[in-house]
Image (tube, rainbow, N blue to C red):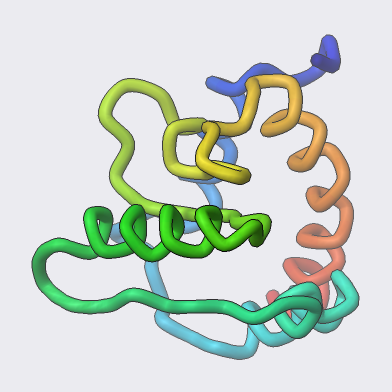
Length: 119
């Protein structure tokens, strides 16, 4: 883990990026972030589960089925119960604190580029 960030400080920074009272639903920042990051959303098949109830259960069942067939999986769900790293799992296991912080360290400069362009 880096000295500069902890899971808690990364989560606080993420929450500070889009406070609920200042949210402006726009797709341009999302599309630009994907572009700057090299379109990782196109690197693999994605199953997006939507609806009112049962999304986490459904996502976990889909994940279990895919893993039972030897596929590697990633899953994002919300909200978390006790720690933000519970939201993200790789092959059925929550990401470690170190991975969470390392990935944030890697993508943060790219998000700053998008912020600078779109503000």
